Image (cartoon, rainbow, N blue to C red; front, top):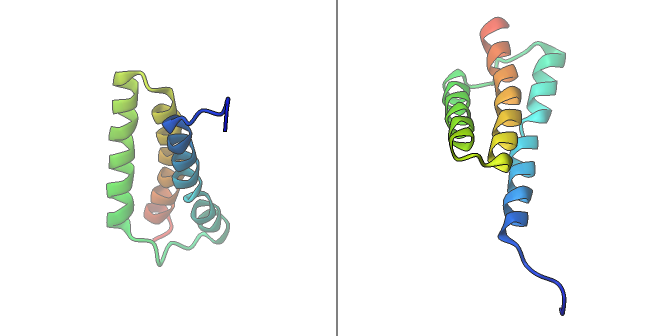
Length: 88
């Protein structure tokens, strides 16, 4: 289509929105039920550590979409991890 340009950035934004928001339902459920029985502690320790590193990387290269996506994901995964540790 004339005048319509493709930007890979939009794919990155869509991926960031989907992968970040994927943690929201679990975070809300954990917060509401106070139950983390079926949540893997090892998985969330690894996830939070990985998100913290991605966030640091985004800050170091000054990439705003990377920073925002990983800050939000880190917050949501951090809530789940904190609940897992607290509600044992």
